[in-house]
Image (cartoon, rainbow, N blue to C red; front, side):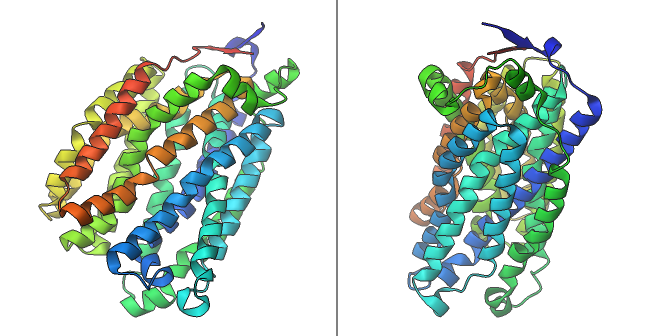
Amino acid sequence: MTAITQDTVSYRKPEATKALLSSLAGTAVEWYEFFVYGIAAALVFGKLFFPSFDNLVGTLLSLSTFAVAFVARPAGAALFGHYGDRIGRKASLIVTLTMMGGATFLIGLLPTYDSIGIWAPVLLIVLRVIQGISLGGEYSGAVLISVEHAGAHRQGYFGGIVNTGSCIGLILANLAFLALSSLSEAEFLSWGWRIPFILSAILVILGMAIRARVSESPDFAAVKEARKVEQAPVVEVFRNHKAKVVLLCLAYIGAGTFFYTASVFSLGYAKYLGVARGEMLMLIMAAFAFLAIGMIAFGWLSDRINRKAIFVIGAVFMVVTPFIWFALLDTKNAAMMMLGFIILFLPFAANYGVMPTFFAEIFPANVRYSGMAIGYTLGTILGSATAPLVGAYLLGVTGNWYAIAAFMSGASLISALAGLFLYPLKNSVRT
């Protein structure tokens, strides 16, 4: 068995910077489109695509369409993981961005239930599935092409920066909807909600222009040169790396639960509290700007101290912070609510900021795309997909936040325990 180490792979700083920018731009665009859907699902889709149900059921059905994309993600992970490990990271990433952009643009043009009846939610779900397949291949590929370009002692830093794409995408999505907050309810429901979806076409063109210029990952090039490319990488993953996939899946669910409860469910909770939609959107944007800075800082730190320790300690503190967050949200005071978001996101920034590189180090380069993508996307089903839906259900049933905080806490505990049993391959890519 040969070993491809950091010393045997050629890294060039200009190409690394270009790869980092392309990954960040593409990831930000993908997440913008994903969050535009999430916000619309929380605010308007229940009324426009499921109007024959009462308010709670309509909201739950709308959020269920949000969750559908997560169920589709493993299919995208297997598909694009296969091609990413067989023909390269770059080609897969260009396809994922095209798919996401096309689906998002078409959602902005969809007729509603009043126009075409049952076909409206059916078409919405089809386009949502396409979004899910796209993002199932996008995230892991964007992380890998950046981290694999980084070279020694910068992988954590690069991974933390790439993960801020989710924050940038969320902030852009919230800004798009915040700009429409002056519209009347009737105008917003009639045509206003479509604008953020249609405008995504501009971002996709810009992202594609940047992404097309990046070179292939040097780690994949080394695997190809050594003739160690797997003919069936997904099969190899499930044959020899099943335990890693399961642990990675479980290690993610705390972060997924936190991220989507804070970004999507919190909008519905603001309405429950009587807090204005615009005020909550502003708080979320400020909180995610803080999170972006924190992730970069912890990613940088993880190149100097144990990455796994940062991941696990972050998850341990995430067991406690949801209770503080909800208590401060209930004050309805903007400053206290912002403090709640900061307390919630500080350990989350540690956990989520080092996650990309920590997860990438688990698998050898010849199956890294497939292994990471499959484990991550399975985790999104257990964590991310369920978070807004479970939150809305528990709030509707109990009328308070205690069960929701306990749900977030339990997910974080599972992630901490799973993280303890994940062991990186250190500085060697075994092929």
